[in-house]
Image (tube, rainbow, N blue to C red; front, side, top):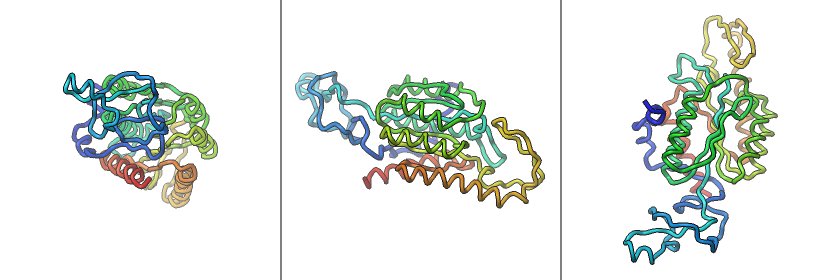
Length: 302
């Protein structure tokens, strides 16, 4: 089975029909009339033709080519560039966690989410890139908008390994510098790191004027703390082991966990970033449908 066949279930994709991945703010791109562009017109230097897609602006149709070939092509200039999205995926060891209530580990869930988003973005003729990270950036695939790009991204997702601790804040600073062109940045992570350092890293993306989305992937047991019997808890990122009576800790743990997720949500709101908590016990298509529907509604309001 190829990596594309593994990650892109036709039934899941069919339930996303009619949904688009919309940019919430002006980004450096223009394609198919779907996204606002900061450019007020096209460069005078002609680059190439591209085939017309329903929704394109008819002002840029090359009618001479149409007269000769009876096919509709648009003139494309140097400043006409694709809408670009970067998927940043956490591969630290904590992403391996999977409780009995979940069908997938957090890492597997993030893999499927990333592949589905990449498919959707390329299908709407936009460009998508991928970066994986833990204590450092492990893979950095520059954006592309072809079928070959989708195959490469799925292959990288399939072959990436999860290990080590996460140092999210410093990684965000590095990635904010490496992603030169303003666009959409989607981060898939449990965000288990020091909130202050993480938020400083997010601010770097904000200063670079990216449209940032935080998808916090959580196992239900991490939120509900539904353990009953005395349990040996093992830190997945070299945090040691501890035998604990769960009932005695549940309320205090849930308060701490809610305070942690609230700090991430609040930072996203203050920085005008999108945020959604995605639990791995929710069907993938349900989470994706809710996320994309929210994006489309917000983009429409803007």
